Length: 188
Ligand code: IMP
Ligand code: MG
Image (cartoon, rainbow, N blue to C red; front, side, top):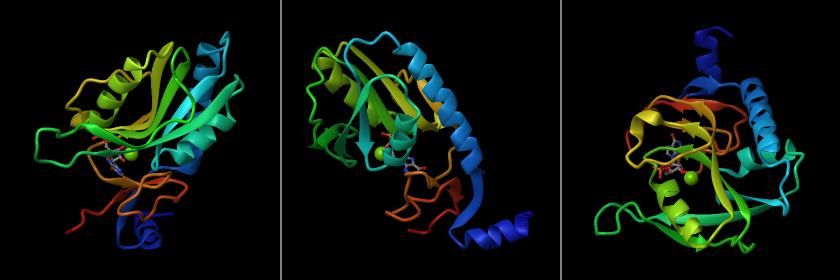
């Protein structure tokens, strides 16, 4: 597709495709290979903890490429809004069902932006005494980091633009696009 016809197919909200379905699939395979290797001698199944909602597609594709024993779990959190002294901290709306103490845990998140979510989440999870704790994020906006978080598995680095698709949304729209697209800047 040339630029003009691609733009027409994407509609008015989406500027361009940043990462195609094929690129995503190839990269997920590479990440799965690394994770399979890292946990090959695991004693108890690895707990994959997906952060709802954004991670659900990444987690489902990644988990289906894993050959190591693993179980899937989810959490839902909300970030405290700006203002007040709790800025940036996270609040649990739904906690894991598995007890993560003494277990190998891999947090699976859609995107690393400011780093706040994963910074506070790892603090909370570590305090529960996990055996090991690592993170896999699908996308990384490295220009926007405010907190330092050590993410072991990163799908793709992207620039500081709003992206949708493959789990990521704009006001709940475009979450299930099979590719990652850059949004046109929105007025609201
Ligand atoms: P944090 O700033 O690293 O804590 O990321 C907070 C959350 O913002 C992420 O988990 C995403 O849900 C959301 N987010 C950040 N950038 C984007 C984006 O470009 N598209 C969709 N969601 C985003
Ligand atoms: Mg999120």
